[in-house]
Length: 221
Image (cartoon, rainbow, N blue to C red):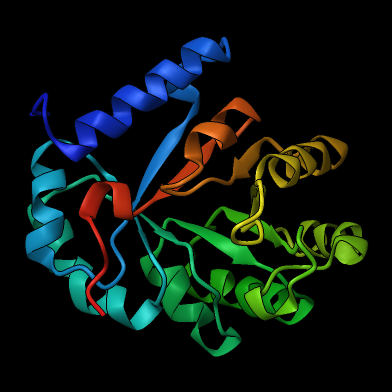
């Protein structure tokens, strides 16, 4: 049961307010609570409030935390929001329900093989390097069409596009750019927006917002 004064209730209220301004249905926006580096004790209050979409950055950390939490709280949808190494593709396919970081041809091949082996078809967002920051991961914009074609040819279910705008720069132009890229490629989902800018992302078409600090506080170092 959601309590009126919790961080989760506040974020949900903010999302509803922004959706009203944008003339959008709040049901169109999935709040992914990014629980990376947070222990089970910090996650359980959100589960008890009924929240079920959570994001993790690392496969190994998720493997350690989530089996027990899922057993106690059915219905969890687990999102991989960090970069994925190709050699972890099979583990990711077995554990996660959505992958937000498909960004290169070698990962397309690894995931296609993993999906065949595990018998799971996990929806994937293609991560786009909208700010031309190769250190962050993400497919370069000029290579996006080819990567999407390769993923579709491999029968990988594409949920949409994902981006991480450059830090300390107004994010709105990058969100608008990702929205246009998604429309140009006939993709429904836009995974964009975090604790500091999710309201802006929703105004510009986000379907999934990845919120950590606003829900859990600062991450343990």
